Image 1: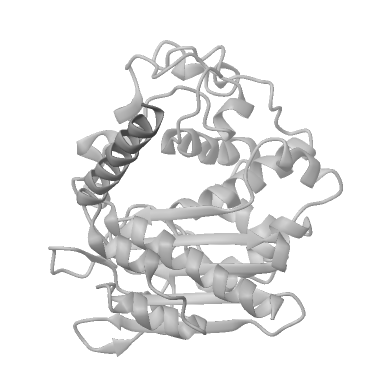
Image 2: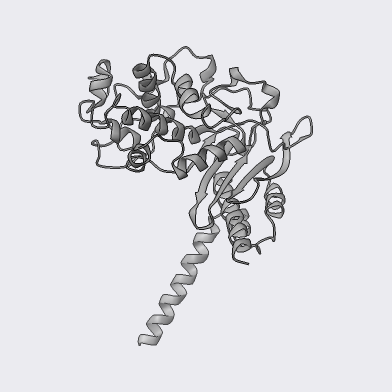
Length: 345
């Protein structure tokens, strides 16, 4: 009887597994199970074969000169090949820069992680639920419960042409949860943190980040907005099913080269971006790697301690279903596996 039960359970497991695979795009399965290429460049070429328009990979292995890998197009329409030094919209990777700026201000005693949203933005009392309980620490850690302005469909309707303050999309709504009870990744938290930086220093947060992070690290190819750059230097961005180039669409993203992001990430992880005491504060409030995603642009930036290597991946294609994001994560993990295998050989 036990053997028969085990046999039945095994059949059920197999059927369930097959059923799950039925709903997984086979392109993801294929990308996962194919034999690992010998080189990063071969993996990039393989990725372009899955339908990505263009790709840049930057690898900084300790003790070696940085390596660059590209595939596909910088500009699909004009048939301009991907340029390893092209500017790219890094989207939410910019949260790392904001978190570092907040850390610096806390370290300088100009901000307190234990003060509340009500303390710093009294005008939001009554418009953000629990404003008197949401601490700066909870905002940095995405545990505030404040509604997410980018979840509002109105945000994506030509934001660069709208005079509306996007924060309004998150106000006068019930909290998503009690402060500190849950984790929910939220762009509203970092919108408020960015504004707080400017409020405390008395000038733009962009200038503060430039003075405190970009200039000391000699990051000459990192910018706060499209208005600061030559648009021809920016990698084109594409959304599956939408023919237009999205590089002129302004969603407020920072812009940088893969190398600049890599240099920043190295300084973040080794602590050299901070003054004394800064890294200890930062380690208590935020992460050391990040991804970024806006229409036409997706990016991954991580430090791999076991091989002392920074890997930055930029891809200029996104889609509605999120499969391209899943695919990019698979490609990224395979690139890291290739690097690890070369370290151990």
